[in-house]
Amino acid sequence: MRTTILIILTYLSVNYVHAQEKSALILIETQNEWMHQDGKLYKALVKDKEMMHNSIANIEKALDYARKNNIEVIHVGLRFEKGYPELANGKSGLRKAIPSAGTFPINEFGSQFYETVKPMESEFIVTGRVGASGFTGSNLDAYLRNNKIENLYLVGYATHVCVESTLRDAHEKGYNTFLISDATSAFNRMQQDYVLSEIVHHFGEHLTTKQFAKE
Image 1 (cartoon, rainbow, N blue to C red):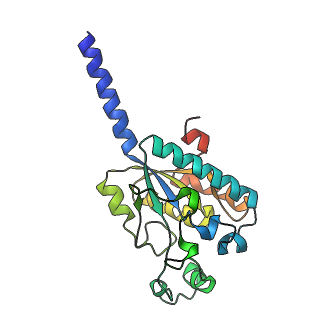
Image 2: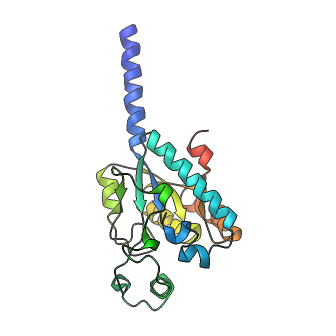
Image 3: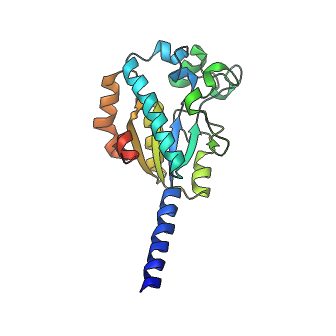
């Protein structure tokens, strides 16, 4: 009987670890442009500073929980070469707006990861991204599939633009997607609430940082 119980407990333990390994916390644009008070996007677009500061604190909490509980951490930033050749002289949308604003220049302040959530050496940093979705042009999908990660927890910026685009894309690619609502921020509360109430349920689910961290 004792042997049987030990086998069952070992089985449950192994499968619990395996389940944890199949999840990843995805940090979207946790970079100075958004999070630092001197960031171009922070100064130009973030109207609800309280929501932004609250999201930063919750990203830090979610990241700490993931690191302590063997949940993989993946950093999905933006960075463009001088002159923005990747965007091919875009005439509209982000392909026009990013070069016009001069945001996310490679190896400069704006594209650097925010100090409190900088990647650790063991954490994967996505490369090649050129669009709103974290998957566009990048090696994110290949990394997730090769490492058999199925459950994606999204945090970062902005909720109604790149986080939403990544959420939609992840759903279409077959991932189980979760948006950590208070660890993201839009420009204002109306945009944030609209995504949470009208968009997320079509492509996944949302939860709070406390729910993610099981507090």
